[in-house]
Image (cartoon, rainbow, N blue to C red; front, side, top):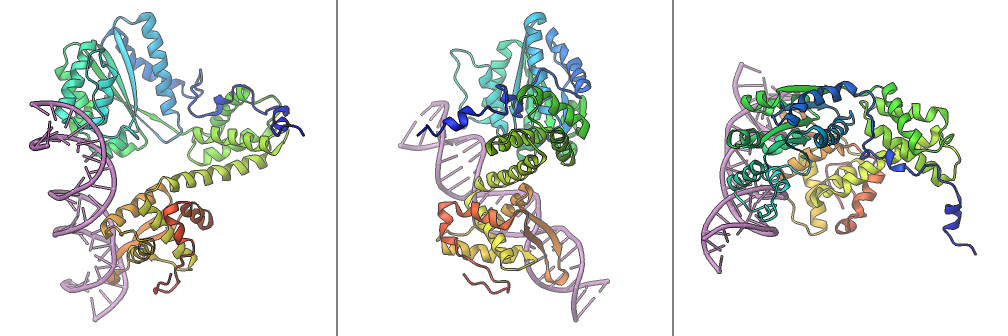
Length: 413
DNA sequence: TGTCCACTGGAAGGGAGGGCTT
DNA sequence: AAGCCCTCCCTTCCAGTGGACA
């Protein structure tokens, strides 16, 4: 009998060897339809090569409009220009505030980037803020150059930790003698500057650049360029790229989404043993992406949020509508009781509900019932069957497999 | 028009878990 | 070991609120 892998090895892949081009993390040599933005930013940052602090820049745009790609692209170009023309030290430090989301960790990352051979490494927690600030200033100043700090998703940082950190980075320039720091902030939210102190705002917004969403034609160009490199000739049916672009354009012109869609369509076709990628594969890919997103979001939820989400789903399965916070809390307490977990307080649960709302797992609208109070009305935003299945994969919750919620206000389990 | 319900969401603070300094 | 400081998760307290109802 032949080896089980033979049948797959024999078959020629639909991808070329450069499949990684179809991952959003890949940074291409050119970014179509972003030439203006690139030139604008380059024009501003070029002063760094002369050893002077460039203006701070704030970049706005929805997800998948190429903000991060452009900024990384500029970083690569800047560093290679510096090797040829640079009259002084230039460093380009990219931080994603999704993970680096406190004043402490931002300063820690900057400081440790310039750590000398004999210096003490700044620990990820433990030091008082002013100490970490002074240490970071010392390291950066000693290095003697122009630092450009890119704060991707800076709106998240500010929402979570306030604008103190931005003030601190700006303030570094007042206390350093040799080095300079410029900020490039990237935000999904246009109105995030409302959260900023007026002084911080004006200094941070010296330059403001808005990335508008790609339209379907632009997405097509992007996809075509990448498909040419990553997918073998003649594999894509004519309409495939158009459809991927159209779907992504509907979802506010998200290029990342378009690229994922194309790659997964080809993967599905390949697994099917098809010779060509068809519209049908794209539709299957669209479903798969949606489900994967949901599954990932649910799996990473904390235990109590999972219980709450299960409560929302069970409630809907039980045929109940207009589920309120108070009712959900009762259901939740019963579920907790069933698996011997002590329930959180009402207040905390209210926050967890809001969190899941912003994750898009549930819809929670504040609604007033007049005399009967004001509360959130909650419904699941995900398919019940799949959602439940994923939640019950958690071993702590296995005992809730048969839990039910009646459509009357009375509960039975 | 005022009342009152069932919350919402801000503020403050506790304490566990991480780390450093002395 | 004791004393700090940090973040994260959570509780406690409470002022504020939209709109049906009397």
